[in-house]
Image (cartoon, rainbow, N blue to C red):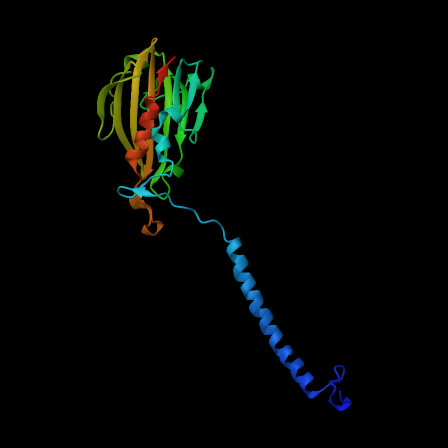
Length: 250
């Protein structure tokens, strides 16, 4: 090769200066573009998980994906209260407070609704959380088992409470071979609504009350932008009623 046409790579020429200048200008833009692409890709991995709203049926009624479980009593947990002589079943995801032994639980006056100051015992409290009906006016629901041997409690066990509130009803039913009187009534106050169902019977000289109260809020008290919908009262009441009907004397 002719010495005059040989490229001298270690020499500074006009075209090497042009290439260097082009790279100097282009590399920052390329780096910025590459960083933007990388950031967009990784941001997808860092996004928090979005909550999945439960599907609905009827007029906006919330139905959980495993809603069939709440009607399958055979799949529930059974609490056998040998100290109090009864058992009852409930879904595993509800909170349970067992009241065992002597003490304050045997002298409380809230062992049943409208006990009129007569003392008794709360044996069990099962609570349904608001999460069962999300984005609704449902607040909670509670089922209690209480009893009393006080003469006044036994005497008034199977009679309607006065006053019983709006929409009060009385009926009779049989649960696992035992006759019960059933009282339903409502109550309201400070924007809160309560729908109460009380199953009562006399057994071994004691008045037993298996009761549940559904607590909701006046939906009109919330701004429209909250997007709350009325809760499915029939769905919640069905779960509570199924629990009450698993009550059995042991």
